[in-house]
Length: 276
Image (tube, rainbow, N blue to C red; front, side, top):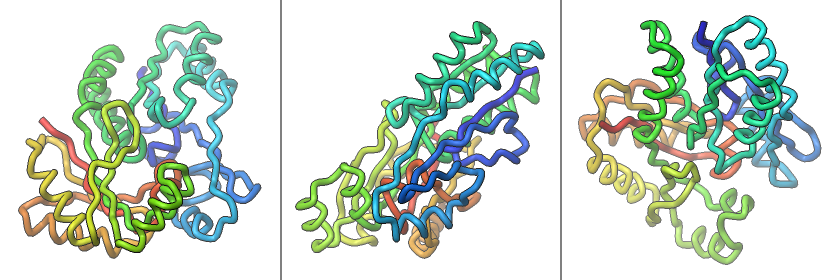
């Protein structure tokens, strides 16, 4: 039997029907450690993020965490596919591979998704559908490896504060940008990093930038379009209205958790889609 594993950076939940194994990623806020998706929900995280004295830090799971699950899979003779947070964002991928080598079981497949949050969720749900249809683990991995390069996100960042605190902007750039009401547009690159692809003055212009970029892609109609938000839905609702005016149907609004939310903060508005 094929088992599916995710970590909490995927923003999947351990109770989701397609998740067999769930690995929480720890986050430290002002000296207290929380396990993502276990003992802190996204809204609580953002509330703590806005009042934190120090920038939150994440800690990758220990290899032994993976060893325990991998040994279980080896014992039952099942196959396991792990959809891991981008290796460019976390050392979790390396830790999982170390654990696989320690267990010595070749029916464990570790996919570097080059992604985070609900981009991973799209891959996982696709894998679950393929599993239901009777595809082998090798076939599921091959098809998901092909799909991962087609899952895209375009996101508007409402505040520069957290990009600065996370070391992605200098103090001067953040200060000037805030005064000028600069709204960066970020995406997850093919290399699995979070990078800026544009800067606009004001939210309305940044939303138009997102719409213009989206129009340049040929969308795969076999996959839904989702809107994403971090904390507070007002900006996302405005983006949804503009998407609808352009003929795009948003299937669902999804919340981005701590793995990405730490760096972009509250007020984010985004569109998630799959290209042909």
